[in-house]
Structure formats: C-alpha cells, structure tokens
Image (cartoon, rainbow, N blue to C red; front, side, top):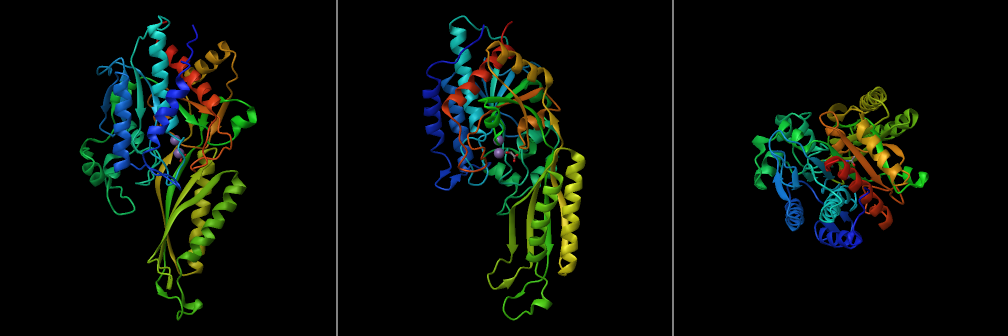
Length: 419
Ligand code: HGY
Ligand code: MN
Ligand code: MN
C-alpha cells in the first residue's frame, strides 16, 4: 500500500523551519559551523524534535547525532537511516542540509501515522541523522563526520586540523564537551545504520530542465581540495621598485585565471573560494598568499590532470616573480555510484505512484557519497527553482518539498517495513 504524507506536513515543516531560523541566520546568509555555539543550539533543536516524537537520541564518537524511531538498534543489528547535515558554508542558504533532516523527521511522522492506521508495520528502527561538519567550513575538510566514521580520514590528521583562528579540532571538540580521542572508523555505527536515503536540495538546474520535482542521484563527480601557498617577500608599497619585488599576489592572480582556463578546456570545475594575504597591509607588498583550490571533474583522470596543470601554471608564474609555490592535497573523494538496488527501489515506487523520477548525476559532495563504499546509500534531490546553492538564494517550492517527502516516506516504508 502506498503511504501518503499527513495533510499537516507542510504546516509542521514551516513550524520546524521557523525554529531553525533562529539559529545562525544573518542578513548576509546562514553561518552554522561545527563545534560552535550555533552547533550546540542545532543539536538542542534536533534533540527536542526527536524527544517530541519519542525517538532515542545518540551522538556517536565522531559527533554525528542520530534520533531513532523504534529505539537504537543493538550492536550488530541494522536499522534504516535518513537525514543530512545542519551545518552551512560561510553565509550559505537554509536548504543545503537542513531539508534532509527536516524531511527525515516528517517521514517518521508519516510512518507513525500510517502505523496508527494499521497501514504500516515497522520491522526495523528508522534513524534520522545530522552528520558533523559536512561542509568543512571551519576546518577545511568536507564531510568530517562521515569521513571519520567510514575510516577514509586518519583520526590523527583530523585532530590536528585547525580553523582560521588556529583552534584545532581537538580543542574545539573539547570546548564543546566532546572527546576527540574517540574519533575514527566506527564499524558498529555503520552496521547499525544499515542503509541510508538522504534527501537534499538539488544544487543545479537539471530537475528544472527535466520538469521533475524530485530526482534520484546516480553518481557524484570525484572532487577534492588542495592548498596553494605562494611565498614572496614583504616590502614597501611605495618605495620598492616593481622590478625588485617578489609579490606573492601576482602568481596567485595568474593561477586563478589559469585554473579557470584549464577547467573550461577539460569541462570540469576549479574554484579558489578561500584565500588570504599576509601580512595583509594595504601599503605592504604581499609576502604570502595561502589559497584553497576546490577541484571537481567527471573522472579521476581528468581531476588529476586538471590539478597537475593548475599546479604547473602556479609554479611557472611563481618562477617569473621570484615567488616560491607549494601545493599540497588536503582531501580527495573518488567518483561515487550510488547503490543500484536503492536506485531501482526509488524508481519502482515512483512508477507505482505514477510519478516521474529521473536519475541525475551531481558535482556536489555529500556524506552519502563518502559512506557509499561502506554501506548502501542513495539520494533524492528536490528541485531548486533557480539552481543556486551555497548562497542565501537557495530555495524550493512547497509542492516540491512535499513531493520529496512523499518519495522519502514510501522508500523508508519499503526499507523499514514488514513486507
Ligand atoms: O561542497 C560540496 O560539494 C557540498 O555541498 N558539501
Ligand atoms: Mn553544501
Ligand atoms: Mn549538503
């Protein structure tokens, strides 16, 4: 039987949204970073939502927080998980992450209502998850919680990561009352999660073009972050002759343009979205530029070629200006193909409901992509009318949100139900 969502879903969604809006929302965008006061407020909000539904809350060793409907599975048992993340990029939108968490709770409401009507029998617990630091805004590495949980990030390296103020992950976790010594691969939590269906706002306009309110993710492009450091010499902005300068900003500027040209040629993506100049005086020739490259491509081969070419361009420009260039990999996520059985399930259930549910790839990274090698995961995308993301302009229409909730609810019913 097809389980529909309660008529009150949109009202509940708006009420939950209004509460979330009180946390970390500024006139210039949303600022929710890991292990901060906002993060603690988000965890309290999450816990209150879970308690209102009689769900058991548990925070794992890596700071990922889950609310279990039907009780947290015992060690060795498996449930089904949905959810996403509540952190944001710097001055981001409100939808990237929170949509998946909210719809997770609303899907539990729909399943509980169906259970009360005798239309659904739960065979295993359903977990709603909020992953720790998906965006990597504070410590530079995206998907920190899922990378630690799946073992692709070395705990020692993670503990040593620092934010812009020099605060390490270790210090930040301790200050928030968490224990950094326990972070790392968590096989018990992987088993307990069972399988994961994450709903996310689409970050692009594929679904607009396809005239579909909801889509299924097929694959994620390989992507990663690299640091580029340009070391020159500080000097007087007035008295130093141009010919004598070792200005670190000059090869950096050339590298930004080179990255754009190479990305265009390879039909890939390259972005220097964060950089700083030292010492940063308006009348001082830049001594150092530290910049982060976010690079993404359809295949790993193209990604490697692109980063190599950008690094070569940086070194060549550095030589031309007497500036030393150092390039280091910060993180890398290989190509992800989401679980075929889950994708087929979403397609079958949509066909039964008479709905169009196209499959689309994405260039955006997600915790579900990081976890795909260690457990079955899939993603449902909700149409984004302008396609803009990582910006306060992120948006979704009410009808599309409800269509996403319907697709999630029927998938969870199939995965957690007694059939
Ligand atoms: O950066 C990303 O791709 C994602 O939105 N975290
Ligand atoms: Mn994002
Ligand atoms: Mn996201």
